[in-house]
Amino acid sequence: METKESLFTAGMNRRRVLGLVAGAGVAVGTGVISSLPAAASWGTAYRTLGELKLRKTASPRGDVVVTIPAGAKVIDYDGEISNGYRSVDYKGYVGWLRVDDLEAWNAAPPPPTWVGQAKTTANVNLREEPGLKTTVIKVVKAGTWVDISDSVSSGYRYVSVNGTKGWIADAYLGGPDEGAFITTANLNMRLQPNLSGRILTVVPKGATVIDYNGELQNGYRGVDYNGRVGWVSNAYLKKA
Figure 1 (cartoon, rainbow, N blue to C red):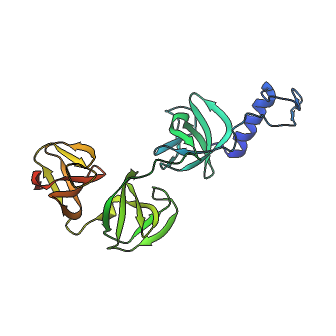
Figure 2: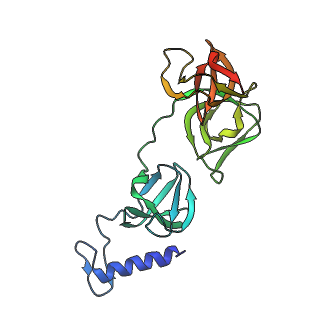
Figure 3: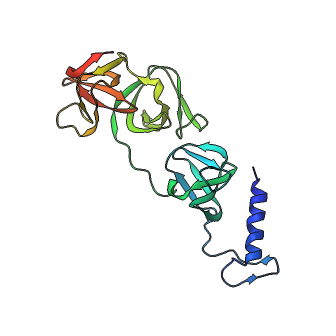
């Protein structure tokens, strides 16, 4: 992998040769640049819209430098866009990400929908971002009830622990009666445990769902289906 310095030097040399610096104060052909391009986006921060692979070249077939978690901050490296890819820096790693997979960092992510509570099944890290190598805010003790949202990324769920928000590995969130159930009909998964609750998705007949928080309300059970949490009618569930 090229270093930051070699990529930067190559980029600057290319601009000197081609004279691609707009505006006054440019000495084309002399190798001297006395002003930066006014429209440059160098240093602009972006947020990743999903788990992304940072590549050595601006191509989907480029070698992978590192995998970047969803919601991570990356910095525009040299203002270049090539083949629909932007050159970026992620924690010292330099490479290319698709422009369509990035949004301006100051654009706030959509607010999560809070869907209930779950209990931690082990001592688990509450992290600033989803991912095993992200910053740990604190360790949450086993048996702690946390507020859970419908936001899941890379196996982590966005939660609130006594008002402190962050990400916890979904595998360590459950309830006292956690277990698997099979649906006996196509079921609406709802945001609230009643017929008026907004439908989140339809769980097909024969699917496996996991009891998420051990709760039954109004004949509905809180369950997890493929990482999505909501309520389904308990009458149409049987033990797996």
